[in-house]
Length: 236
Image 1 (cartoon, rainbow, N blue to C red):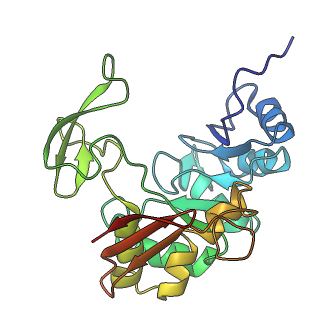
Image 2 (spheres, rainbow, N blue to C red; image 1 turned 30 degrees about the horizontal axis):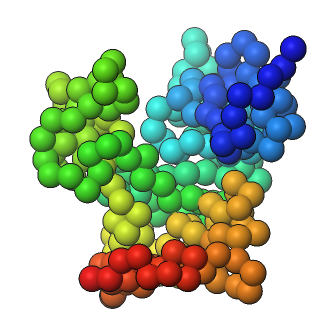
């Protein structure tokens, strides 16, 4: 018997090479939940099969996923190359200027374009907080993380531990560092993700009948005002 425990889940990240992943993709899609590929060591053939079973999105591209590798004498494309090869596949990028360098931000934009890219923070609870030690995940059983240099790291500094970025920083990075047109940077933060998760009937653009959510910023992407459903919630 299948039971609905929550109506609040809108997307789910799965490694498609794992047993049961294809069935999971079909079940998620049937329930209106976006199946996404992430934390995966899949090769192209597995990603293509997953795409055919509902996985049309990639969680934080380049982070926690396979790229070209050799198996014995042969080379195989990984999740990253699959995202580029499958035109209809949409992707996320953590555009904090730390997870991905300028060159990769520009490469992803050049290949996928603003209609297929979502800017995401992937932030943990230390977002907007000063440098120091924080907990990633559950406060009781989570992983200790260190925030420094504008990013969260594992205590031994061997890997990132999520992110501390805010959305204005993502737009600023794409515009100022990656050289993406401002309108495209904003689109990847608004209209594109709204469409991909199926919320574009009320979010993502300013149009009659939609929520009047407005962010006003200056030329350096410093937030000046935030309006939520027509009400002023923040003013700098």
